[in-house]
Image (tube, rainbow, N blue to C red; front, top):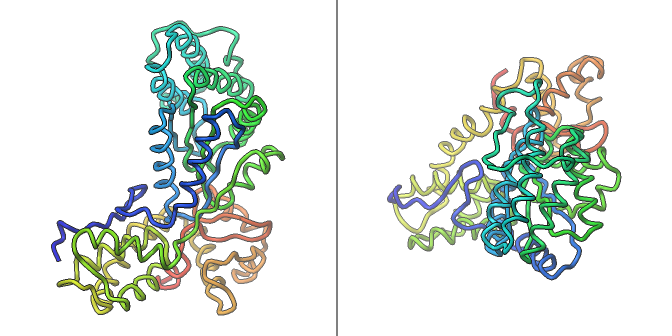
Length: 401
């Protein structure tokens, strides 16, 4: 079939042609927006899940919904080596600029921008790296005595409160979207939780929508015990069979292409219902299928190409980031998770990994901690680890040592 008409889009954060299986999350967020518009209290939102399940796509879609209701929005991607102050400054600057045209009092807007500038400039101390400095395009003197103490927890509470009051004036809200939220530093996580706590008590129309790996709730709980009640948690998982079929068939139908039932059976078996894999196998199958309807034979011919592409771009690139010691640790994890009594994505006890490698558990802590920091594994429960990437264990078991 014509590769130019291929509708599938396997890409990092790239919206698929059919956002299937996420109606529950979209409907819930629509309720959040409506409740806040009516002055009702509502919690901030945290999306969690493995890599490749579409968290970033969903985050971007939720942001589009907020923009459609004339909310001020900003988005950041957290990094483990970057303070929260500069990216939050840039994101809120964008949100305020979106609200400004709807506000009747330009001086009120300027007052909040002055506070924002004061908050941002606190990041530009002599110890800051050049890349972490931000020169805000705000042609106003910074406010004094507001959001400029240098304590990120105090300053963030004051900044969020002032920004939220601006949204109250125009009858909408502000939504701050944070991707890779688990990579925030401990002090920044604590400050973010404190700010959201203050906003919830005030009923202020500013919410945080975060997305991160499955251990993100534990990261938040370690910072503030009340975070368990502060956020609404939604686990984003792989698609069920109906949704996976829809993700494949709806875009194809728009191109007047159909799938045989056996082809859909095999595609679900290969992809496991993970959205990124659904797109990858769908794209390869389209390019290899000679005509409609697509058959299971077409899928079998195309599967090796999809798997080769995933091996390089999805699995291999992550494996290459690991040191030899970290690779040894992950190979042991893969072997153990491949045990017939375990699902390949199941968590593995760290004590079992130590036994398999003939090492003391304490000696493996540096490799484990480094892999967690790199986002390759996570610890959902004490004493266990699991891969953040679906099918990563299966991939490692096929690779030569």
